[in-house]
Image (cartoon, rainbow, N blue to C red; front, side, top):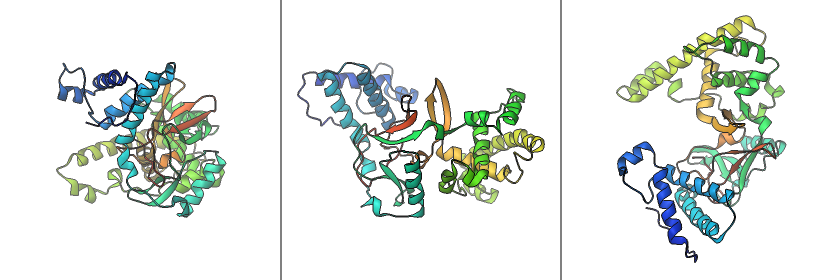
Length: 342
C-alpha cells in the first residue's frame, strides 16, 4: 500500500482517504474484483492502472466542482499519490539534456518550433530505453508537456477527405462487407505510405525522417526466427496477426493499384511497406476522443513517448478553444528524466 505522507491540516482528510479507498473499489477491473471478492467496500493501493484511474477521476471531479478546502486537501493527496506511483520513472536522469546534440534532436526541435508545440521535452538516445523524450527542465503536475495542432494529427479521416485518396478509398470501403470490413487502420496505413511517398512535399516529412526505417518485432520475424519461440503463445499470436494483416492487404490494396496506378504505385504500396505501416501503428498510435468519436492517431513528436508503467503523462485531451491536442503532466518529472506515457 502506498502511504499518505502529505501533511494536511483540514479535518476532512480522514473522510477524503475513505472516499479514495472506496473509489479504488469502484475502479477495480474484473480480474482485480475476482481477487478481492465482491463484499469489499474499501481498499488500499491495488495497481498502477487502478490508482491512475482513481486519481484522474478525482481530478475531473475537482475541475467540475467549486473550489473549497476539501478540493485543496484532495488535490494535495492526489498529487502525492501520483508522484509516488511515477517516482520510478524519475530515478534515472540525463545530466544537461540540452547539451546532447544529434541529427534527430535538431529535426525534433526544429519541427516543434515550426508547429509551436511548446515542448518541455526533447529527443535523446542516451537513455536505458534506447531512444525517447526527456524533460528539458523540472515539470510540475498539470503543466502541458507538449501541444500538437489538430490538423497535424494523422488519422483515417484525413485519408477519407484527401483530394487524391478519398474517391478510391471510399469506393473500396463501401464495397467491403461484414465478413472483411475496411478498417480505419487500413486507411491510416494507406495515408502513411502516401505521405511518405511525397517526401519533402508532405507536411509530415519530418515525421518520416524520425520514424524507424525497419522494425524487428515479432510481426517482422522470418520463419526461422519465429520457430525459435516454439512453445510460447507468441508464435500462434504472431501468425494469426500476420495472416489477418495479409488477408486485408490482398483484399484491398491490389484493387487500388489496378484501378489507380498513378496514385497507388506498386513499389510504394507493396506488402513490405504495408507491413512497415502496420508496425508504425502498433508501436506509435494513440486513441483519442474527438468530436464524440474515438480516433486511432499517429501524433507527430508525441509518437516518440515510450510506454512506461510509471509514465508521467496523462492521456492526451483535445483543447477545442486552441484547436490543439495537449499532453498534461500526470505527475512531476525531474529534469533529464525520460518522460513516458502509461
